[in-house]
Length: 168
Image 1 (cartoon, helix red, strand yellow):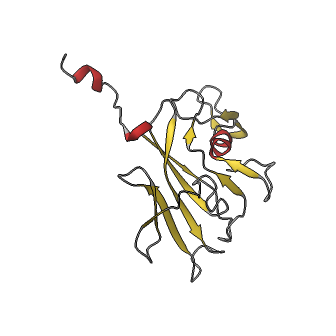
Image 2 (cartoon, rainbow, N blue to C red; image 1 turned 135 degrees about the vertical axis):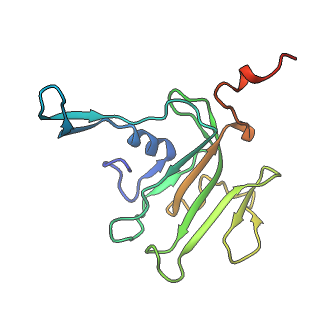
Image 3 (cartoon, helix red, strand yellow; image 1 turned 180 degrees about the horizontal axis):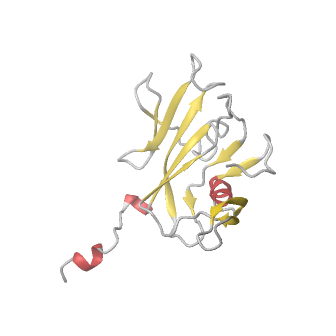
């Protein structure tokens, strides 16, 4: 979700979306206590426990009537979240259109290529480089739907993998 205090003219960043995701939520009922046999209040807090190889962060871009919400999100090139190693922006998916499913609307993907530059894919034209003078963090800030972050350089780390490697 987006922070409740954010307005259409406010610039948010991916860190704001993650922080809102981690916000503690309190519920007055809904959890059944097996000891007292009654519905009890409870609270829930979500967060990512360790640095993933790939982190996807979805922006709540559409309302209940499928209208695009116009708040702006800046994609940080390097993402530093509490308790995690730094992640690099790998790609962003955008929706160009006023309403989800409208004729003329469509998705655009901008992601890093093998040359580590950003490429634009729109399904209508040949893929092309994002012009160097345009920062991906500033590109179509009001249309971004999904942010993809990876470990630096696209490296991967798997739990327990280090113990499987032979001593060199």
